[in-house]
Image 1 (cartoon, helix red, strand yellow):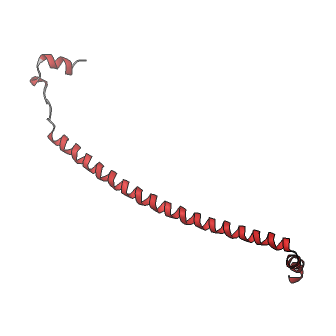
Image 2 (cartoon, helix red, strand yellow; image 1 turned 180 degrees about the horizontal axis):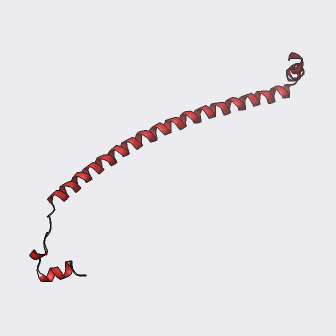
Image 3 (cartoon, rainbow, N blue to C red; image 1 turned 45 degrees about the vertical axis):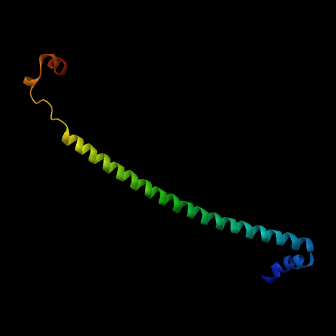
Length: 100
């Protein structure tokens, strides 16, 4: 293994241009790795914040729906029962309600 890599290491050790290019390549790799790690952390933080906000909105919607359901139940309970027989309806309204 050493015999395969020795010419490459020897070339870099003797050439200043190769050292600069290799140094820039390592620097680029480190910067890209740091950016990838920062992006993962940022993405996780944003997902946690979105999840927290969605739980708040979901709780608020459920509370509003419960209030609306209670209002509907109260309105249904307090609504007049209506006319159960056609005998109590005047002829004027009977024609409107029971017409064919």
